[in-house]
Length: 261
Image 1: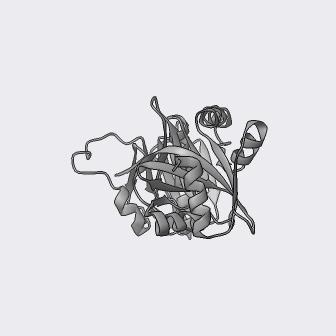
Image 2: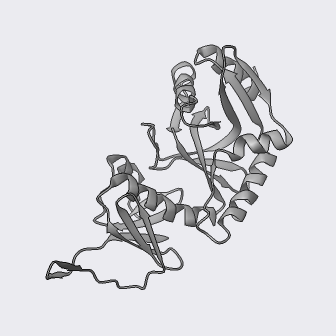
Image 3: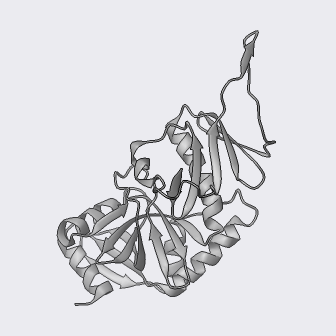
C-alpha cells in the first residue's frame, strides 16, 4: 500500500522504482481502504500460441502509453495493467489514475520544482530546460532549503491554505521527498543576463502559470475542476516573474521580494 498526498494506492506485484519506498503506508495504516487499486494481469493459459487473460471486473477504459496498457473501470477504482514492461509508460498510467482521484480532492498537477524554505513553499515554474531544478539547487546550496520535488508537484486547496505535495513522480529530476509544505509564492522563470523580478497581475499571471498546469482531459469534468482550483490558487497567492542568471544574487533578490528582509 502506498500513501501519496493522503491518497491510498494498493498494488499487486507491480515493479516500481526505489524512490517509491518512502511513500509506502505507515504501520497502523494497513487496514486503510485503498482509494484505487492497480495490479498486473497474469497469463492464465496458452493454446496454439494464443495467450488467455481473465478479468474479474468489466473494464470501460483502455489506455496505452508506449508499451504499457492499462484497463480501468468506470470509476477509476480498479486498474489492470496488461503490460508493465515499460517503466515510463507504466508510471505515466499510474499518474493518470492518481490524478483522477487527486483533482476530485482539490489538487492540480503543476510542472514545477518545489522547495521548503523555513516552513514555507516556493514553486518554480517554466518549460523544461529553463532552470527549475537549478533554482531549487541554488536555494538548497545558499539558503539550506529542502527540495521536495524537482518536476511533478501537486498543489492542493485546503480550508486554511494551499499545500505543495511531493510525489514519487519526478520526471528527469532526482529530487523526490514524501512531504508537504504550505505555499508562499509561485515564481515563473526566465533566463536573462541580469537578475530582475516583478510581480505578475491579471491575464499575464494567468497565462504564465496555466502553461505549467497539466489538465486531466480524460475526465468529463476534469478540466473544469482544474481551472476552478487554479483560479483560487492565483487569487490567493502572489506570482512573480524572475529573469535571472543561475547565481546566488538571484536567490537573494527572490528571497527579499517574497519574504522581506
